[in-house]
Length: 309
Image 1 (cartoon, rainbow, N blue to C red):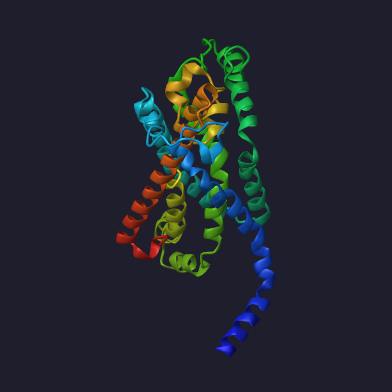
Image 2: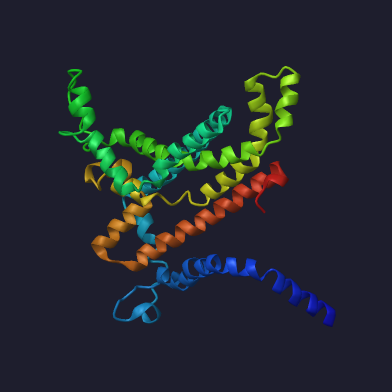
């Protein structure tokens, strides 16, 4: 028993630098992810600033019925789920294609240049993106209406008045801004594939397409599944900057741009009801958690070794 304690002490001392390196990340997780859990009780309370979190009266499930009873419930749920499903599918497809194209570039310096270029949109905030979009789509001064359509003799398009254009605009902006980060992850995975597989395939007469479908994609499958599962966990959340800032919070576009997050935010601005906002966040987290469990269970049944847990 004493020797085990000594061995444990030695291991702790030996790994002390690693523990110290872990501390900032651990502190961030505790402060940002675990300490706010105490505030979950707000979802079941009628919050009053004068009484605070602990003394505010309980009101059962009334906060949860807020989202379901509203006439906009179908629209915000449809938009949140629909956009996220589209982002996951198209984003994964585009990122894989770009990663494979990057791998086909033989010159390392060119690869590094391309990686830097495709990561630039990811580093740009949605505040800047919203101004870029407005500079392109503004009805009177936008580049598309003022410089392109006008030169072609076409009438200006009321981009910020007609919601039918915005599913395409938002999807394009989201893919343009995020595909670079995911493609780098897939590219790093491809770089780690043993090149002898490809050499053997070339000797056997395999075409480029056959190498991609028989070697690259099967090797990427674990990463694709992991990133997809992580995305599914946040499928009931929406990127606030994308759906609020890019359309400039235009009321005429709510049918195409209103999601759970933006709806709750607007509700907070109007009613200042913290309890309802907490309930919405609670519902999003629980549904996302259940979706991850369900999706992982399906993956575990089909291919057990590919599941997260």
